[in-house]
Amino acid sequence: MSEDITDRDTETDDSSSKAAPTPFELPAGYRIQEYVIAKTIGTGGFGITYLGRDTNLDKKVAIKEYFPFSLALRDADQTVNPRTTTATDIKQYKWGLDRFIDEARTLAQFEHKNLIRVIRYIEENKTAYIIMEFAEGLPLSVYLKEKGPFNGPQMEAILFPLLDGLEVVHQAGTLHRDIKPENIIIRPGGDPVLIDFGAARQAIGAHSQQISAIITPGYAPYEQYSTQGKNQGPWTDIYALGAVAYSCLTGKTPIEASERNYEDELIPAEKDAKGHASPALLQAIDWSMRVHFRDRPQSVKLWRDALQDGHIPVSPHQEGDKTVLLSAGPSSSPSTYAPRPSRKFPTSTLIGSAILIFSGAIGFSFWQSGNESSTVRNIPVTSDTARKETPANVPAQMVPKVEAPKTKENQPTRQVPARRQETKPNVDPALAKKLAQEEKDFQTARYIHIPEAYEIFLRLHPNGKNSPMARRLMAQAQSRRAR
Image (tube, rainbow, N blue to C red; front, side, top):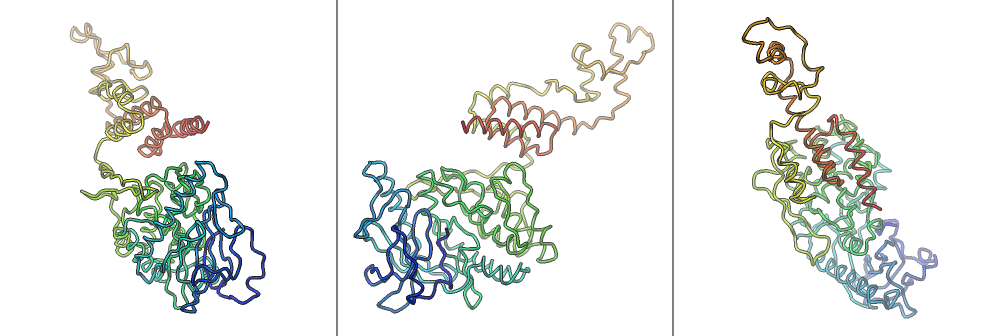
């Protein structure tokens, strides 16, 4: 269940809290310093959210408690402890609690009208509580059902304020990691506010291998499916917010990123919402939802510019730009990736780089040893290569059977096939070169035989003659790895 806070939870009379709480939840009326619990309004894999009241200021608040259900139990005195006394459980519980507190400290620094405001955090009952303002209004998911699909101006009125708030978050070196319609509240005046940050949950889930508890299908990008939390950065939140915009304009939840990675059947917003918003807006949304993280806008600024003027770079990485990967946990150091090479570089350079990354220098050295004079089978030769071929290595069906004049010049050399070939230069040299390169890259991927190698080959040659076979081999390699 989501940990959302909505206006449907604003009632605090006795009738709103008659439902019997589970043994895991704090009961209505329980006091945490000056805050009193009214009722439970949401539970998730790693915490419980309550509607509460600040008795000093007499105002509603939202209270989020760290409570990892798979690791913790609540005692009769309401203290929270690890389920077992094993060192592993104790260590995991404490690690998650530290991440929860770190997130509270980070969020408390943000002062933006489109971000939920964190008032304070409290360490008590051997756990911790984040005290936040209560966001009055409707979740975007409910608002969308009532209003129907948005048009361009309606979408921009929600999207641009959220981008402003998200930019503040990214500039502080953190991510939201759980943007979805349920976590966007539309206030009575129409202003959107982003709630329920998932950065701590993502880190805890990655640490405990419980990714399924924090993935929202349709809105989570492909890199969030990794149990290691790798390759995440501003582009991760940009994908999720782009998916929200896609849903608002088309009325459809996007296809899950894990399915799109192998065969992308998502209808682009530019096509599905054509006529309902400007081409610039739709094209920028499609850009934000590209499956591979390096193919998306790398910052809020880049995406905002594209949303406004429709300018989308041919390559998302500009000269000197860097892709900074934010780690899943605060203790890890960020790593910097150089810009992806320009498309002007030959594909052999790209595949060589991939080999170095995924398989090491052995595979790369083996395939690099081939030279440009290597014969590529089943590819028609040009007049230049025909001169170099000998009857022993030219397929018979490719040699025209033509009788040459019986002269002294040609009888000893017997180069009749080559000279006949010169009279019919119908083969496009560029096509032959492209096919040869594809064959070489495919054989390289087969030599390495890991999913990543086939994935790179398919990005380089998505519609090549070897692409169907590459997809099958990639599936086999993935199945073998899973076992």
